[in-house]
Length: 399
Image (tube, rainbow, N blue to C red; front, side, top):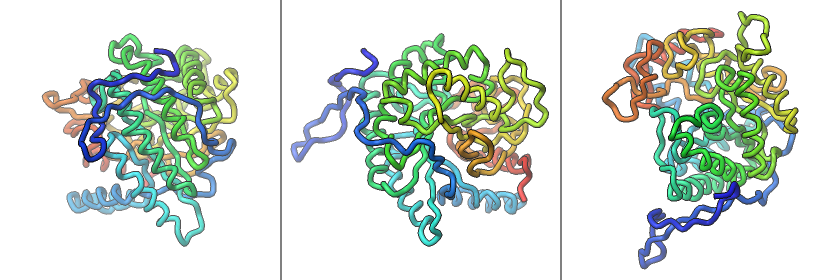
């Protein structure tokens, strides 16, 4: 199939009923076509002069933990004030998007300050192709691709279009393109590669709206910050953005999503050109230079600081699952450093990366490594002990 996709009739992708007759309707994979709407204005940081949406569902979850852990209740209560991203990890999650946007509008009323809602798109077919812990619901085939387009992306896009006067930031498919940079030797990643590229390009064409600021994922310094990986990643970004209508369709790139590299490492040794930066600010600078050489300029970056408060806590750089000793990092805010649009809590603090139970579905051995916190539930479920440790280890400390 070409990079722009082709129409494919799906024999088994049922999308509900058509009319009163109840006849099944087949979904088709749509081609990736240039967007019909203008993108968000270039050079605008959506977080500047704005507040970030505080998700009441997360607040309620934390309040439940306060009751369950009275000794740590005062510490947990401090989390209630912090904005966190909303992950759209399944087709079922799309039904809640209008509710969150309506609630963000309520938070905005009376204050005169715009409220930015931060969402994470996270449901590609064959999701998490190099790990099992966060495997998704859609298969790597035409049926899965069609459902991703029409039952997932299109539904989200419709909700965004219905709220044209609200600022929205969207993080696009964490770990997806990054896996294509380094893990194409894995059969699952190799099988998913074309659908990943088309899927992300399709999402950009539909979600690139005047009020929606898109951030393509770019992993973190310890993964793609190495010169050889950086040299492979930028052409991939350029390819996908060309498919989606051009680099102007996105605001920038999201770094360190769900990871632990510090935003700024105060103990960083002098830079060695052959090595990756030891922190995300250094990586952002390296990535900006590489993008500029490729003709992609003026991009901003957001950094996930939800658990990067303590540097150098892993025995192996490749360990990623519920790392022991992690701490909450810098608080969400706009313009914390040059080129950085915002620090954000993208990975929701306290939500597990994956289960540590070797007998459970979706078990990944990394979640039972020497660095992983034991007793972890399935990915996306609240992990009480891990959140409490994040708060106790917070750097800067919680007031």
